[in-house]
Length: 231
Picture 1 (cartoon, helix red, strand yellow):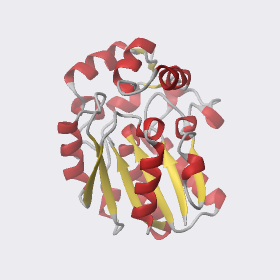
Picture 2 (tube, one colour; picture 1 turned 135 degrees about the vertical axis):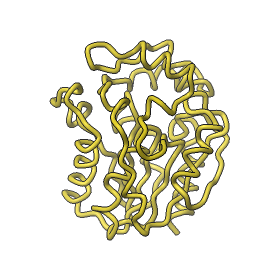
Picture 3 (cartoon, one colour; picture 1 turned 90 degrees about the vertical axis):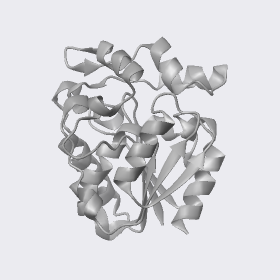
Picture 4 (cartoon, helix red, strand yellow; picture 1 turned 30 degrees about the horizontal axis):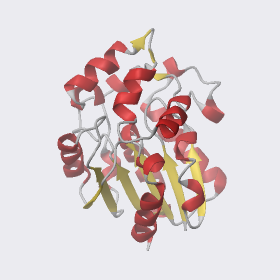
């Protein structure tokens, strides 16, 4: 069994560091184009297809099978693009407070209006760059000072175009078990929007009492949940 973890917008694979030591089995935290191991890619050029291709590339390079794929936040529109290609390798797909808007819409159309204003203000020259104070309000509302400082250090530039690209969710038709994890204290992607995304995803729904970055604030509970879903 293996775990493949896909980050959301404005961060890279490093956001999973508190969780990785707690998981049983092989683990792979993917850096999508424009950050981390793929930082040489200009974020302004990145598309959703590029993100899905990077995910598939890393899984195939690591030759992973029997995978629990975990898609956090904005990765909710990356994972479906890769599910068809990876279907034979997948044991379960977990959508962790993941943004999964209806087919034919854009992510920017589906997020909370207050968050949308902050996001749009953070896009300049095609680059999405989060203001640390705004990011702290959206991502760190349930963190202590040390966790907040660490989280802010993980922020990276991202592609503004990804937020306005129309989504392709055809991969959700793959016959793979899936679970949507709703985070009850999430101020970045509030519970009512998580409910809508969970309906699009289908499958099961579970709840965790956490803000948006549950892998940072309650990594032990996230690990326990993932191990349970894997079994």
